[in-house]
Length: 262
Length: 185
Image (tube, chains in turn green, yellow):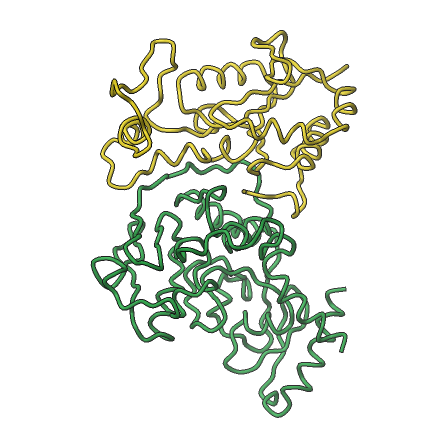
């Protein structure tokens, strides 16, 4: 079934892209042929073909950074981050093997255990990408890691925006959005190793030039509930939230299904 | 022979037990297969016999919780942590990480009994009766105190989740929950 979906998708894609596709080449993801072109990463090509590679630190519109490692795939037998690894002709990519599945589950679990991710009280619950990824990867059995329960600061100084860094997973999406799109550098990494955290360009958030219209503050930028808009809490009822019905990544898988039918 | 089932609510809100009753009339089918031992549902305070399955709601916030949990581990073959409080501490665990607090427990009690704007406490006392179980320095998850075999996430897990999990547990296997039933909230 998926094989049919992808073939149909590739055909329609080829029509659309036309001349640019002269540089096109084919490589394999889990043994299925996928078309890529020069300059594309493995993840770009997989997205176009309707193959979802799980990711947290990468989001459409921002430069990929390759830091969360959830998108790790095996390229010709070697692990690589699919969001930064360029696609190339004839490479063999493994995406949905048990080994990689278990790597991803462990990564997500460690993120849950390293911060304070209290889903029952979190405003982002239901649209949180970390939570949705745990759902998609089926994490519900006891893990082998202890909960670190760190004490991290909360910054409620700004009238419209609040930062709860207990939930930060240091994906750097707000940093890249602020730097590349807003041109403001409101957010940045501070510290090293496990003490690395996201800091703001000022004593607190109120003293920066951050604005509600910034891309860094947009709801789709923060994958967890770290950047919260004041006065907007729990705006979607339970049952209608983004990931209540469909798993994360299903839009990518469905988009190709639609194109294929046309 | 019927399997023996014991349940308890530690540092939880009883929501998981309420949700357990959301299996509605299916509880009649369940009663054909299980015999309730120690449980707040039948108000038995002590174990009668060794149990096959023990369901734990809530984590450990005082010494009585720890004693009860250890007793459950001693008397149950399979111990299942039910709900987010038992799995990762849930809402009570918020008192572990209070920003700028040297002593989070003291700060928590002060805010609850002394400093909150709506508190009327003329004697300025924090409850300290010998009959009250001693609070622990922080809230511990079940897995930090005893070995936990399985866990069922949710706040609370829905009646359907309970039903499916019970069918798996009675078969003696780990529950394989579908996407719709895995919830952390």
